Amino acid sequence: MRQAKKRIRFIRSIHLRMFLLLMLVGVIPLYIVSTIMVYSSSQNQIQTRMAELQYQSVALISELEERDYMSNMSQPVVTAEIEQLARFFRGRIILVDSNYRICKDTYYMGEGKYNISEEVITCFAGTNTSRYDAEGEYLELTLPINNGQEEIVGVFVITASTETIRAVEEQLQYQGMVALIIAVMLIAAVSLFLSARLVRPFKKVVRAIDESSQDSVGSDIQVDDCVETQRIAQAYNRTLARLRTLDESRQQFVSNVSHELKTPITSIRVLADSLIDQENVPVELYREFMTDISAEIDRESQIIEDLLTLVRMDKANTELNISQVNINDMMEAILKRLRPLAMKRNVELVLESFRPVLADADEVKLSLAVTNLVENAIKYNVDNGWVRVSLNADHQFFYIKVADSGIGIPEADWDHIFERFYRVDKARSRATGGTGLGLAITKSIISLHHGAIRVHSVEGEGTTFTVRIPRTYRKQEVDL
Image 1 (cartoon, rainbow, N blue to C red):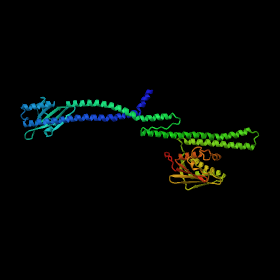
Image 2: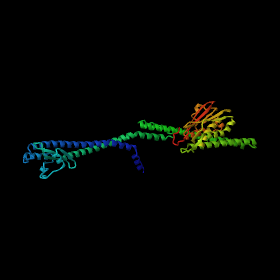
Image 3: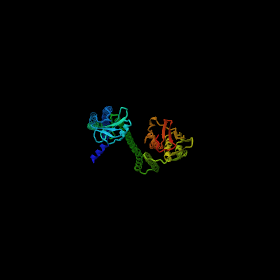
């Protein structure tokens, strides 16, 4: 099983693919060049043979015409030359008269017979013909024979064997194959060496990552052998940095959750122990302690509820219950619920709606986000202060602005206030009953709506939160 897995890994490896690619790049052009060279050599020999055949034939035909051989074939010297030329080319010569009758055949097989082949007929019409029969391994040439009045009186047909050319071609093919095999072996060795060299940087990357993974938090790697491995190392280091940040955030989150959940329980225990240790506790003191215990229980419940809300928001498949919402009515309902809280501190709570706004939204979640912003504006305000909430829109977005006259937020904390459990003033936050999760929940909800939130604040003068959300919800839209 292990051997089979290794075999499969090797087959799928880039090492094998690069080896095969180098082999193909080296062997295919070599094979094509070898084939072309053998073919070109063969064609050159055929053309040379045909040119020589035509030259010798024209010379002999000139003598035939001078001696008027077609009218008087009883000329031993000319007949001998014809037979000698046929033997020289290891072929056959046929003379055809004007009646298409074979009057001379060096094979002595066709004399007296008729030859009405296409080549002969074409030649009597005044056109020479030549052809190469690769299967029969011979060349054929037809030339006209004229008399003194330039009249065609016969046709000279000669065939020449190409066995020698074929033999030379086969020899070249054999030599080319031997050379190709040797070249393939050399290319295979070079390809194996080069492919091993080319994948070596990637193996170094794997080894560096393996060594890095042995560390609990991982360590950066550096492989600068080539641009690709350098980019892989940089991408790994960036991913590792994000993982470290997430790990630190997780540890900090766990620490904060443990602390936040433990604090109300500790207070409850202290109050309960105080009641247990005292005898004949006055009713007034008993009621005061029980009121404090009830408040701590409410605080613990609120922390747990906020944590559960964040967990639900963090799920990748979080679904929004999108419907068309009258944002003006939603804002009025939120301020109506929070107005008693504002009246306790004599904080003026004002809503300014510049135009009617209808938008696609999850009303429950969006209402929670806006409630958190307005409630914080009231809690972290000064007595006799003000909170102004405004609603506006254009053709694409609607805008919610929550401004207050409160204590303000230092600029150094602006980038952190949306982190979980982050508090600008921890003592004051706990005094107001905050869990440190409200703004994190708010930002998560706004992000789910593909919106954005910004903060601007001046210490001692107040804070302004601005929310922008698309009026039309698109599920695949990129988060802003």
